[in-house]
Image (cartoon, rainbow, N blue to C red; front, side):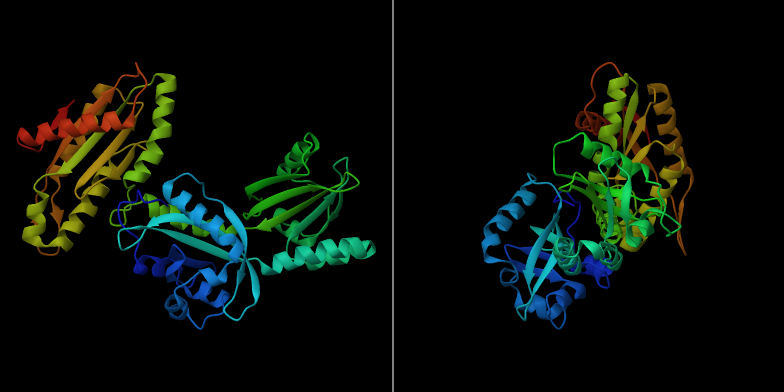
Length: 413
């Protein structure tokens, strides 16, 4: 999520998504807490989220020697020079205890119109304590390794230098196989990771976001041991991934119509456009604007205007092909990408869409509202590398001419 979102994120938006989330969620700016959900307040030992927000200062909950690096990281995230990743950080609770959280920081546009950092946090204190206990136990209690591994929630497997599994705990089997009883079968993703580890001189190899056969998402870490055996740990991050998917949907979709917003449109179309350019295939971009939409709002009210937008969105979407991409990029303005589409076909689609809009009134409880739309179309024949910005600009100019010529028509750039 970045500040290129079409609308700021509000307290109400986050409460809707995260009030009862298993993840801790906070919005902050320069150590000042702007929002927190109940889960994060509980992790930091506050009575409730309001108490944490009233406290207002994130600084005392982070190690002082990390403040400078964290401020730099947040500044880089807002500036778009540092990528999203999970970081394991030590935190101090309000009663002075130490906990460990896996934290992901993203830039959002807050409800005051200014960028802020949205942090999602998972409590991994038990995992950290378990790992420390495990390392200590491995040194002191080699003989009881099986018992220790079976008792921990993290998936653990130890493979010989030849890749044969020596120990696989029940947590690992639960993540990767339907039958939890021990067997010698190694999942392909694990075999591939071990092969990369074997061909590398690195002591550790990481594979993040792996989908297991049981439908769980895990982070895999392979570490080489003193006898050239390899210890593999698997941490279940399914809940974290699900929350990230919610955030991504929130960042890329228009809340009213559920179509892509401008950012989602750009992210979806640019890779497709590169493929069109590499293969020399034609495509087209269409900009659509509902005619006299302000009059609809002024006459019938914004609720009816919203209903009209949703109706027109659905009407356009159902007329398109599976590979076509449609977005709401402004108040009553839509953009459509037609991959692999010749100029003749694109013009036919545009005229069909125009007719569909004009022939089907928007029906409310008391009214049947006739609506038309103007279309600007830019086609590309595959002869030179295309640029989305230029295609949209030319389609938009064609739309402007359609408006000048009387609306309810298709004009080709």
